[in-house]
Image 1 (cartoon, rainbow, N blue to C red):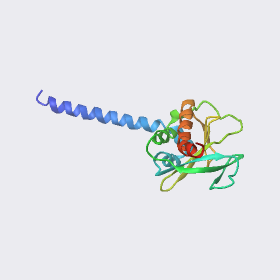
Image 2 (image 1 turned 30 degrees about the vertical axis):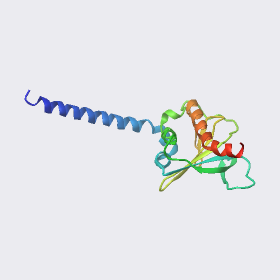
Image 3 (image 1 turned 120 degrees about the vertical axis):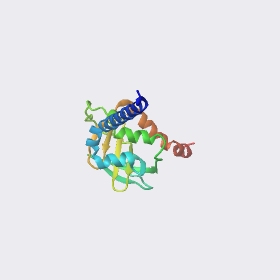
Image 4 (image 1 turned 90 degrees about the horizontal axis):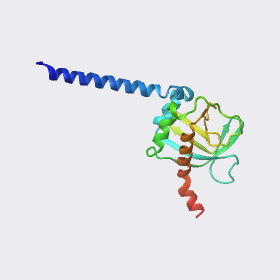
Length: 177
């Protein structure tokens, strides 16, 4: 056992490499369906984009202030109250969830009821802009550009709605003391 220590170190390195490879492959497979639904470029913008902007969506065009018109299937909505959301904090968890399969209910089809779009998140990286619209009455997220809709898991939808509403609470409190 002259080389026992060297052999032990070699075994440790090989086990670490095997576990690292497994972790890498595991991570790639966890988002296969979501990446297929959104597309690779949009998935990259969602997960790693430099900027994220949150908007409230309303069916009525605002009388004053800046708004952007969005066509969501048969519905026309207006994005108002735009604000930049910090890339850190809780948003990083939702960005990861949007590209991981576990955040979506793949067995449940999107209900054929009138949508109630309430929020939009726009993600930008150097080459891609990707906008997701949310209907929490149906737990649906829609990629605005393609019209692809996915059904969010109930807990993910509840926590996401809470997070998005929190982003407007400070301003709402100042307007309605």
